[in-house]
Length: 512
Image (cartoon, rainbow, N blue to C red; front, side):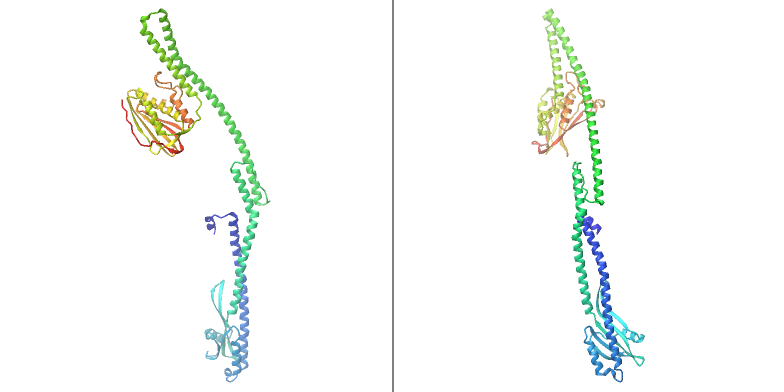
């Protein structure tokens, strides 16, 4: 039963009522069985007592007519016939001491060995014929045997068979009443038990569960009602105390989180100040060098112009060209610095990554630095759109592609592919350039860090790219060995729906 209840999803009230009903029915069956057996025994004893009286009357009647040919006396035969016509008597058999029949009246089976045993032992015998099992017996026949005594000796025997139909009728009435009482009592107990359990146990527990669910949703102001001063009431009190302690702990946790947040903000502010200091030093260094050169060139130009030696025209043109380049370098540094410090754009859109990659390659491939570089493009099929900003993402691709081209001054190849997994839309850019030294991998995203010559980079490209990808919720991963090229892998969040318009796998080769 327990295993059955585990498999069937039942409510607490239903399960308790069912268990009580089973126990009640078991107890009623036990009590009813006992009462039935007692009543059954009493009815049987009444039947046996009445049958013995009839047997005794037959014995007295035979003794009264003993004499010569008594078994043929019409008066005795008339009396025996009257006995057989009584309700419940199936037959009467009278035999001599050799078991030869002298008088037979009625129907049913003839006498058997039980009659010989009664005559031999000189005592009355009783046999009950029945079928069925212990708790549901079916009685068919009662057979009484007794010796006949005349002049102090046994002269024969008598056997009387009684029908048990009347007994079975009474027993069946008792048994039907017993079953009806069990059913009615069980229904009453289930009905009243359900009402009482709902009021005393189930409803308080249900209210407690509702409070627990609201507290689980974050409302720590809820408290369990205390309706009864019993175990459920004690449980509600203990639960309320636990919730109060939990609310206190939550307040302590909130205070601790606030303190941590304040400390973090202080640390971030300190780090920002330090970063600004490092950036200012970098800016001063990066701008200082070209400014010194510009000032030197300007001073020489000033002196030459002052002397008005026009034959030095070629020298003057070279000085002017150098001044122009250093000024452009200052301008580029300032633009990258403004881009790095610019607040993030809040504009977000679903970006067709395959199309954006193709557009980016078209833009950069016409530049002189890409003329000796072969580009291999592989676009994933059924590629989902990415969540981001197309202009910012294109800037990231430009920075990575230009860095790859600058790492291959003598030419090489760049492999660009798009992929997808369960969470990300992936862009991988791999080159065959000089690679990145292990000691430099941790510095490539630092502002103003670069291994390029001053006229080719400011060291802000990858810093800006990392900042953009972080703001879009993605990440950048780099894999490189010195002398074996580098691979930058950009992970972008998938859009909620939509596919790239151009999902064909394609390869493009361009050689200078």
